[in-house]
Length: 404
Ligand SMILES: [Fe+2]
Figure 1: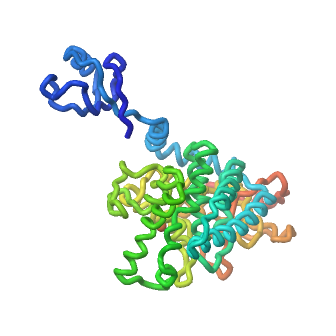
Figure 2 (figure 1 turned 30 degrees about the vertical axis):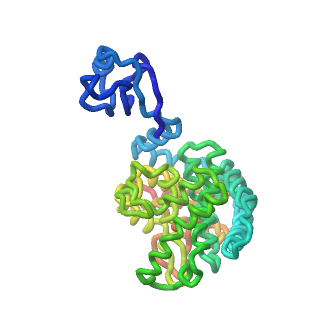
């Protein structure tokens, strides 16, 4: 909150007055902190011989955030469907993104292990990873999100940091933040759990349940991270995501039990993407949830643990696949979405027609919502210009969607 002194003649309806320039005894106003509801309030202030007032200056960032949070849900979902057909991925882009991903996870590991060993903090490496993420996100919002689940590394913390960085950058970009802000949030995402490097390793990697004492030590990672980044003179907006990603909408989070209105946009983004990646990742001791189940579960938490609007924009970032979308599968096969599944939008019916070597296959209908030995998942929508889709696939689609 920023206080600004203005002349009463410049007051507008909607302004939030924090203080009048007269003492309480000199005015007829019972409260000196209020919102200007209509013109008559301004007239009353003027007739009280008050020349100046102090108002809460709303920053451009706050205006942007309040606009985002007021967007109707339907518009967001419509835009998601539209974005899915625009945000197509070229196969070459996909390979490039998976290379960048693998390299960046390795770099993150080095930076974090140096911190654990008490060596110098390699901020340059962090900035360079964040710049790469922001640049790829600028070109295509979805391509990096499609590589986050491509392979699971032994050490969860580094891949999780990378994933939070990628999802945060994608979400920030969907929220209309400029490229500079996207890069900064990518940086913040990468560093959000840096404090875990200062938590004893046996607690950090303990499989199974933590004792109460271990749990509270684990929670300290937020404060450790904040203190560490402060010491390294990291900027405030980057600190916010690290410091607030465990705060919750209803005030049940930590370390400061902040409520939604007091959590920054960076903190709100951090909470959504951190939870999503944590519950969808495979760990040594348990299998991660599939995206549709994770999203369904998170819907229940909307406006209790997480901010609903930010979450809806996140769904948009994850993507919905309309009928006819050419998709790349985790088996590296290519297919076309034949029929959507309303209850499980990321598990439609797919007509697989090409194997990973680019060889044509007899068309195979795969229902992604049905459990099979080979678990197929969609990694990303693919640009159809470079692939020739056999006509028979389209006749299949027509049959599948025929209204009887
Ligand atoms: Fe965390």
